[in-house]
Length: 202
Image 1 (tube, helix red, strand yellow):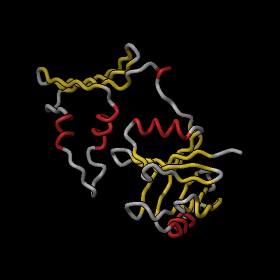
Image 2 (tube, rainbow, N blue to C red):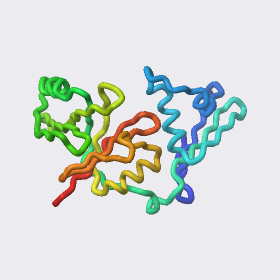
Image 3 (cartoon, rainbow, N blue to C red):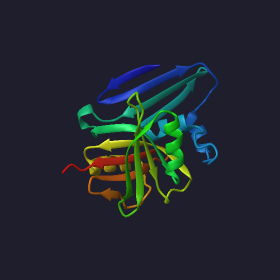
Image 4 (spheres, rainbow, N blue to C red):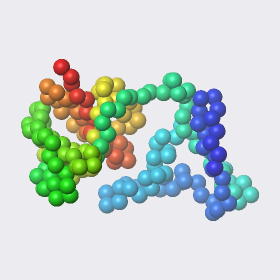
């Protein structure tokens, strides 16, 4: 494997003498299975993020070039992340809270009836300083979702960046808002969930 940085792009070059394998063919055959949503997730992530992919097989050798970035570092979009921790979005929050209390987590604070969607938010922390958020919502498609809570300093900028990378707002064109925060549950094409949050400082 080689990594080449050229003209503002990062190119990964991989070569092996294994069985002929063009993973683009594997991706074309993939069909979503709700019982195994993680199947071929590595291939799907590469195809989603890559700007260009070239594959050849010469003299029984696989040659794969993956162009990852096509912009100079100063041109790439970034966002400032202030909090990054796991989150559970569930229909019955108290069941999850009791489980994690038994594991040593303590409830730090609880907010109820957040925004017009009526979400309940519970923040927990253990003695090692690890945070966990548990949210209760009746509008999710399954009983429990695991997500990453990601606080940012500019909600609109982060929302736009995630949308440009294929994320969809679970609440459509709505957000969960209250006097101190604004949030949206963003779901990627591969099913990865990010709860995007911005605290509103007064």
